Length: 252
Figure (tube, rainbow, N blue to C red):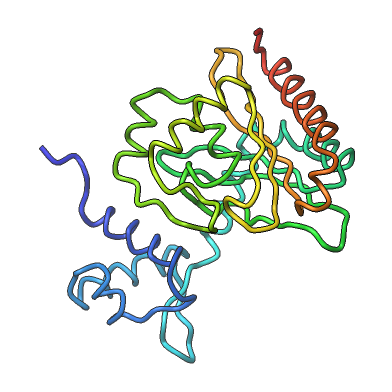
């Protein structure tokens, strides 16, 4: 028995189309992407517009996301305890390393950065928070993946179409599996040039009271500036994640 309402699912699918599409889309384009009739799409849009989830540009007659979604997104972030909890730690870590400090979490089969404190340097690396990406693709997300169950890892990797971000990116599932084992063995990862050329990331896990890894903290910066400080950056990162884990109730 199908426990899902098709109308609600179609509405959710329509909203998510805007994540990787142009800012505005018309009924015809949405109809093609959803494989629904224009009439059905128009009804969905009208309903979403009435509730503030979608708004229509009066000049172009095309549709874009509404401000209600921004309100809901802000509410999710404000209610996300790990985000609030991590902020002072990220601030201190960014201050002590002078580089970008970020918090990464998993959401179903995606990874995303949910909080960050930027580097003070004018030349610095930046990340887009709340943007989803494959869990195998960054040092922070790989740390998270390394501490998940074998079933979850298999689910993520078995059907993954590996993206070659740079010439140093992983080219096989076996390489990633070996990397995950190494992360578990040493308790952190240092990665250069795998996602962005000239960029190095340090990442370590944050454990909760049950012993589960709830998030990963990363320090990221230009390789030529951060690599010479590798030992100091790693020491500060591990001290930060260990303190965070202890305050969350974790006992090694």
